[in-house]
Length: 125
Image (cartoon, rainbow, N blue to C red; front, side, top):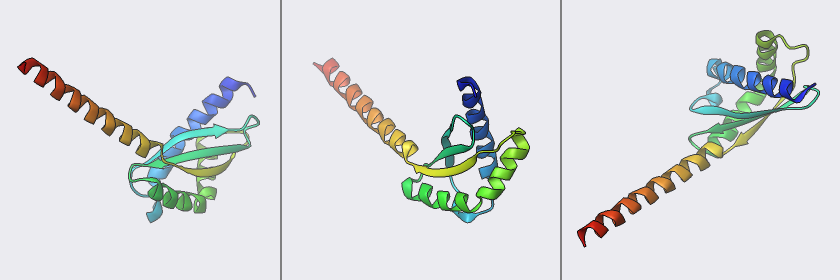
């Protein structure tokens, strides 16, 4: 399969997974979950799904347990919605990229705040 087709399938799966996750009723899969990335193998038989949560890595790990138990349902729904010839096997992986991104944003905010303070004191001289 051509690389652009794999990229398109990955993006389609990511979009549909986000929708399916919102519909799940498992209490482990609640909260602010984000499907960060989907890596589909070159033959489209496997897909690694990276899931992150704003609350942290522990929440993401709990959500992954719930997603693993619902893998059959999720895979069936993806097959129905995307009309793929072969629906890939899904492997869910907890990711902490949102938590890291929020930390970086906080550092940048603090840095900007300190930078503004030093500019204000330089004007006083």
